[in-house]
Each structure stands twice: as C-alpha cells, then as structure tokens.
Length: 303
Image 1 (cartoon, rainbow, N blue to C red):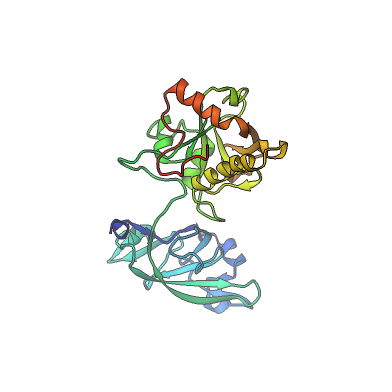
Image 2 (cartoon, rainbow, N blue to C red):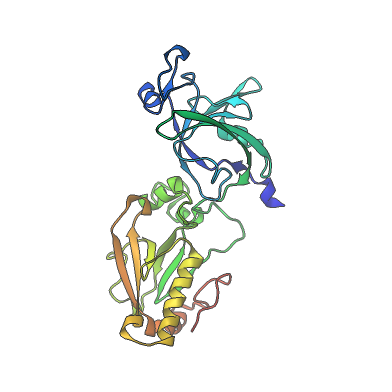
C-alpha cells in the first residue's frame, strides 16, 4: 500500500517557546521553586506551542491550538522543536520521517483551560500520510480542470505554480502564501483558482487586467472548499435554471479573492449567464479545439 509508505507528519503548525515573556504568559515557570498559582514548571529549554492543527491529520481532534508539546516517544521536545535521539539532535519532523503511516507514537503535552493551570495529557497517535492543502508534484497525472463560459478553473498545485519557474519566486505572492502556509481546516480541502480566460461572448469584459488570477471563494453564496464542490455548485446552478427558468436562476455569481484566502481579501464578482453556458461550451470547443469542458474524473456536465 503506497499510502503506508508515505512520510507521515503530526499535522500541526508550531511556535517556538524560546521567549521568557511568552512562556510566563501561557503559565510556564522555569524554576520549580517559583511555581505560583495556575503555573506549571517546565525547564526553559523544553516545549513548543501548537499554533494550528490541520483537519484530517494524525492529531486532529486530539491536539488543540494552544497545547504545549513536551515529549515525543518519551524524548523531550526542545523549545527549538528538536529532539535528542541516538546522541544526535534532530528536528522533530526528521524523527517522524523515520516512521511509516500507521505507526503509533506517544505524545505528551500540557493543556490549559485558562483557569486551573496546565494539565498533563498523553496520547497514542497513529501516524497518517500528509495530505496538503496545495497538491505537491504529481507524475503522470493530468491536472483537473473545468471550463464555464470560457473561464478555466483548476486546483492550485505545485505543478501549476511551476509555470512561473521552479523556484516559485515569480509566482503570485498570494498563491505562494497558500502553498507555504495554507492548511486544511474548516472543510477546506483544495484551493480552486481561475487560471485562464478563453475569450468568448459569455465572458466579455472579464480579463486578467480587470479580475486577475483569482482564488474561488463562493458560488451563489455557497463557500467553495474543493474542486468537486465547485463543480457541484456550478452544475446545480445550471440545473436550477433548467428546472425553473427565471431571472433569479438565470445568473450564477462566482466570488473570487485576489491573491490569498488567508488575507481576508474583498471578493471580486464574476457573473455568468447560465442560459448561455451550453452554447458557450460549444463555441469554446470549436474555437480553441477543446474536446472536453472538464477533466474525465469530474462528473459530466448537465448540458
């Protein structure tokens, strides 16, 4: 099973605990003689703070933001996120790369409720392979795509970012941000981007000068968390018009964020005439020699 051979991760974003003021604020004291009310003794060179937990990861629903990781398989976790193993100092992620998906590690942490100090907890964690928000390089796999009204949408991936060069330095800053710092949370499984505009009567006035390279946020007010979810929303909008043609069902609203969804950017609005989508697909196919309006793994369109 290839999934078992993949390098596993815990699925957390960490903040180093090397600042005394930060350690004191979260309830840690470096001297066992100075432990006060709602304080916990922890040597000053031990512990890292959990900043975020990725949904579906090894520690999802067990570890929480704000927890302090102190031991991994009985090895103290230093405040710089390293562990000492076989007389060597290793990054915690390097230690985990010696494991396989399905292996179990023991994690000890401190957790506070804001009132009664920090409580020690220990969990046996079954490691899982990492499933990133932005897909890393895939070999012999064609990219997923869909075209509506001449607008081409696809999931953000490393292969797509490589269009701007292997080092990514010229890639749009917002998309770089999603690649390096975006995590799966709140239902988000993928980032869907508007990657190309094939000129057609359906998209007159929409150019990259006016709307740019955008991240899809919502369709008709429904948040988009994956490529399949986006396609479902768009196809449902078309079917709603077919079932009950009216001004209310004739138009589909696609909200696009310029750059990164992490920045809370104000969305741009693209409106497509649903009644013209079928004819637009035929025009785009004939004009650009596009044999399909979507990649084979996506459900067939409803026109």
